[in-house]
Image 1: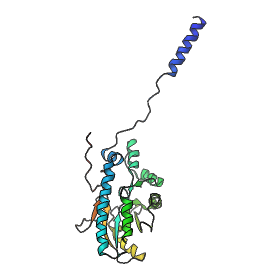
Image 2: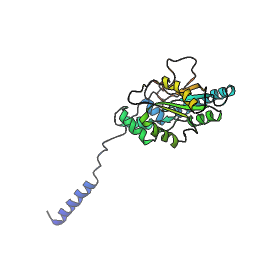
Image 3: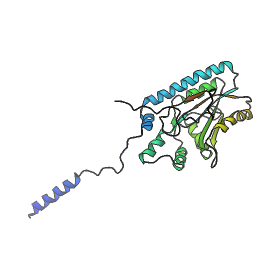
Image 4: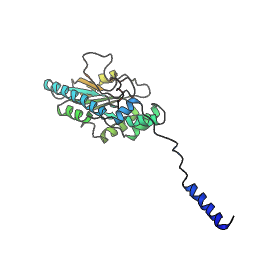
Length: 241
């Protein structure tokens, strides 16, 4: 082979190497489960949440008309009711895993959950009307400080917006919230507000209200798409193209 032929062969080989397609990424995006996709990607989820909070606002305005300021309260769940954790669900599905206490603990430490649409205006309206806001959650007591900091980051401050935040004691605390609901009036009494009545409960799961369920309890259900737990709303229907 002449030198010029040899040089041309090397040049062609180098060009071919440079134009070889890159290998496909090891990880590719996945299709999200129906409920997670609905909350993450469909505006209807936020619209429905705002509608529920609008109904709850109408109700507390009626309550305020017949109750003295400072004598009534509402109890709200936190996750998927006040704070939206769909990013956590997306992360878990992308690696093919479900909920674990360890991954949830890490997520809460990030303090990056966002607001559920309608939650903040509702809480502000309750306070304007003279009501109290109690947050009753099954987040662990070891996550309480992070939870309060996450709430503050989205504009919900203790005393300004809520007076009570009750978590679940670890390691033996029961997930049943009823005993904690019962404690709310006593905690408010200790803060100088005796005789407070909880007039409404708001949550995304069936157990975000006192158990056993009573027809006298006023409960407003936020639809979280059936992402986890025992949702109080039916799972959304698939969106038809």
